[in-house]
Each structure stands twice: as C-alpha cells, then as structure tokens.
Length: 326
Image (cartoon, rainbow, N blue to C red; front, side, top):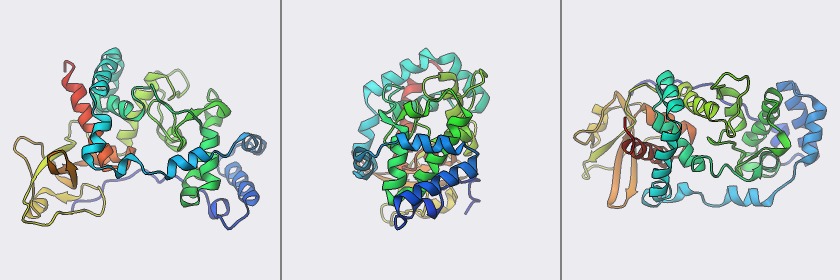
C-alpha cells in the first residue's frame, strides 16, 4: 500500500462531562460553559446569556435521524444533483463570477468548476442556505442527541469562539442547516474558524454571502486536506466480474493500480491514472458501476464523507466546465 494521505489536526470534541447522557442536563450545560470559557477564552457570561436564548427543536432531531440521501443507491442519488437546472445554474454562476473564481483557481490549484459544484450541491448556488438558527441546531444536537453529542457540543463551543473572532456574525441571528452548517458552502463552525479565508482582504471572513471569501475558503479547505494541482479526481474502471468486488476499509487512495488490477479493477481506456486509488462500487442506471477514486476524490470526501457526494460534485463540475469556454 501507498502511504496514507496526511490529515490536518482533528477538530476537538467536547469532553464526557458535557455529553454523557447519564449526567443531569443542568450539569452538562454548566460543564459546557466551563469548557468553552477555558478552552477558547470566551466570556463566561456571554455563553450563559446566549444559551438562555437557545431553544430545543424537535424538528432538528427528526431531520438528523431520518434516512438521508446517502442511503439511496447511486442511480437515485445522482438524479438529485445532476439535473439540467443545477447544471445550467452552475454554468451561469461561473460566468457571473468568472474573474474571481479563476483568480482563486490560479492561486490554489483548485479548478473553478469544483468550487462552483460544491456551492451547487450544498445550497443550489446560495439559494438554500438553511432556515434553522445555528444556535438552536447545535444546542439541540449537543444536549439531546447522545449519539453524536461530543461532535455537536464541540461545534457549539466553536460557534462561540467563531463569533468572538468574527464580530460581524450575529450569533442569535445566524441561520443554517439542521446540523449547524452555514453559508453558501455550508461550513461548520470549526471549519469556518480553522480554514475560512479573507478572500478580498477586507478584514473579515464572511462565508454567508460574500463570494470572494466563499470561493477562497472552499478552495483553501481542499488545499489543507491535500488537493493536488492538475491531478485527476476519478476514473471509470472496467471490472473483471469473475472476481469478488473489493470493498476497501476506507476511502484513502492507498492502493497501487497494479494491486487493484490484480483484483480485477483497471481504468477504462482514455481514463486518467494516478499513483494510488480507492475503489467505489455503485448501483447505476445500467447496473453496477466501478470507479477508481484518486487523491483529489478523497479530498472531496473530506468535505462530506459520502463517496456518492464526492462523485456527484465531480460529475457536476465536469458538466459545468463543459458548458463554458475553458
């Protein structure tokens, strides 16, 4: 196997004193206040005052526990994002913002069409950025969703730290997804804090509607997770059906192509090649599809862990690029 892809530091999660459901709720909230104040230097009274305004929302619990798009087969998942309206919208969005997008692409090596495709998949080019208060979403999930409470309590703490750093963000008024993601690119608070960029050097990082910051930040997210300039993303693979399908433990592109060929997977003629890949087997319209995901494919899965999400972003990006002049 090839070496693993280097990863940025893990985003911190809240300690058990905050997230253990066996501990009374009031004690968990008090522990959260201590944790956030001590870890991020946020004013303790501000945390208390903001939490007093937070509201539990059953609709958020319902949304996060219902089956998501990821349980759909690829043939159905793909149709959610590969619509003519989304393709045309992406081409129009790119042309409207071409200078800014091309500038970021030249600086970072992340092609403009992939930045646009992320925005297209996440929010339909900024049209649907979420209607939940981020404070309510993260509060509800931190204290009433034990399965993932450590993660969401960590994100709630990051939200307080973020809004202290970015005073233009009005914490009680911030709107986003039911999971607490914000803006055109749907950044979680930790991603916002760690990897958002001030694209036009105006002294703030506004990922809600300010496009120079949005474009620079999506590209930077890719770069810090290992995006390789001018490298391929995926290849459609021919598969020897007489062999069992290979299902890797994870999506890291650590398998040499020679080894994958021995397992029955070879890039189809004309498809790109790279040093290492992962394998993705999907149910397509015409039956099983087999793909080799390279390092840049893996990077897209760091934005969203679903292998189908990454392939949808790739295919949408290709369609957007095909409809505009290079």
